[in-house]
Image 1 (cartoon, rainbow, N blue to C red):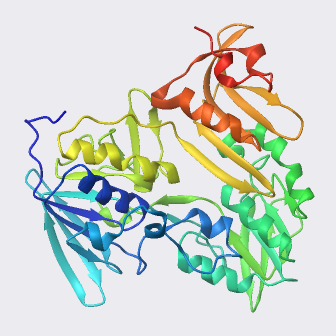
Image 2: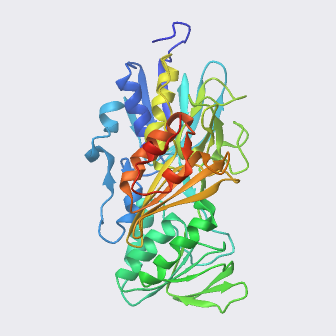
Image 3: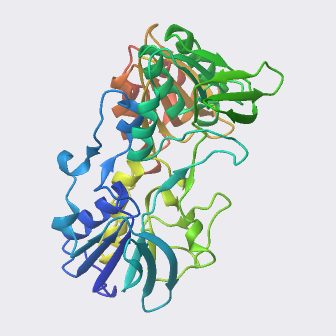
Length: 420
């Protein structure tokens, strides 16, 4: 159903040519938008998929182009595409938005009725560290791939999703690999220390040394050798150091044009609107932090959010009913294991083990009593059959009541453990 009270914009400017920007353009066209559409991207490349940058770092030398996956082509969707143009300033008000961009030909100002920010994120590493690489773009991947030669010493700082993916591939490729993590266990920030402790043995089995907790005080560079200085441990010598310490929203260029969170994300609702911000701006993907009544606060940084959230944004812009927002979802291949996280564990959630030995699922639950609890999230290791069920059970902010005994039995389908 279309809301006749919504004024559909005549021109839309999408700032960002990654997955979120491409999907926003595609959703607008698929939902009937016939106005002028302009897409601006800071990178020189056509849209590509980021997960293969780490998952297939040493086997794929070309980017995984999103057009080849059937997700759309900017040239077919947009009236104008400006790649290698970085946004430098935004001015937005009641009636429209102006964007300053810098490209090889100099500065240019673009205008539109609505600007959609889909600028993504950038990798971070503490400024005092010297000679450290990061992995977030296709150019980053090419640079890192050249240096990961068999026999070289690689130190990966951070045992999160990216750190685990790269370290396992590098060890299998013949590098001497050490991973250092400031937390007490790998994936502690993403999945908690209970689940992280179950993941830790995977490192040794894959030929990777894991040190945690091992906070890094400094990384020093002298010629071709890097020294990683640790708190309370002997320093490590390395030929290559990769900082896999997370990303931050690529919003520093906004200045005071929009409200942002402490991490730099633009706060938005399900339709990408910025509470307290100008009506001529929307935001989606890694640069945004979405809050809805059903899901609560959903931080950016998830590939699945960049893929699915543009549908609601496009629907809102065109005055159409918003589709349901799926539960947050992350997948990874870590040290020979396929893992996925569905939902967001709450700080007070307990973990219910659902294991058949080789494969397992950790269910994050809020206890009601000794027999029942509310499901809030799930982490799977080599149990693909549980992933789809978790996504369905947690869709739209669902938090179903579970029979704990049935939920812990790996032979019982999760949907069968749901109580009335």
